[in-house]
Length: 185
Image 1 (cartoon, rainbow, N blue to C red):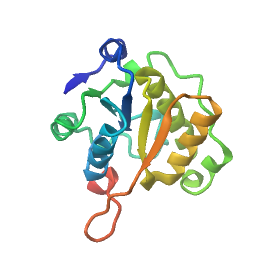
Image 2 (image 1 turned 90 degrees about the vertical axis):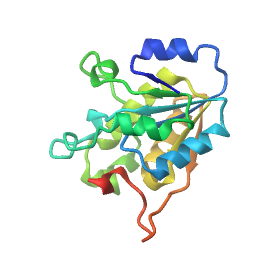
Image 3 (image 1 turned 60 degrees about the vertical axis):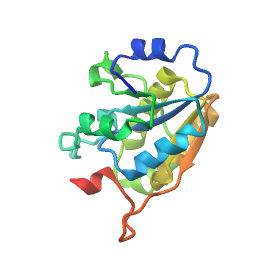
Image 4 (image 1 turned 180 degrees about the horizontal axis):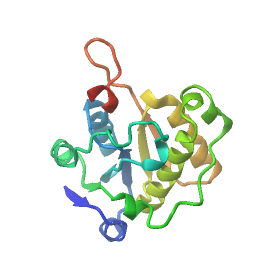
């Protein structure tokens, strides 16, 4: 497994790969994420995971500063499951102020989006950027965030992205609660 933090170096590493499976995350990984990584192996010869806490999807009074950054522990969990971990800095992903955004469909303003204005715009923007960098054949997202999965599928279809979007089953704790990085802090 190789850790890469620079998008140009990632492109060099992935050059020639024809069946990349990609799992984007914000890190602080749990069994739900690891299940997606295991599923990814059946969708590609090269599995790439990203770890990036995206400031664009956090509102002004949300938990961006408190969100756990656990890169070393995450890489230990990913050992043997993925070929590449892409962990860019904020400056790598946003070298200039971001002025172009993906405008998500109206469902982004309902359900979770009603309480988090701008969240899905930031999420869709970074996912498109990551998909452009990694150029996967398949990208996997958890069904736990069904609204997000729906928006990503619409984005991929309507922007003619040649990427198969796969939804992975929700992994639950013994008490039935869906595993979530936010349940850990």
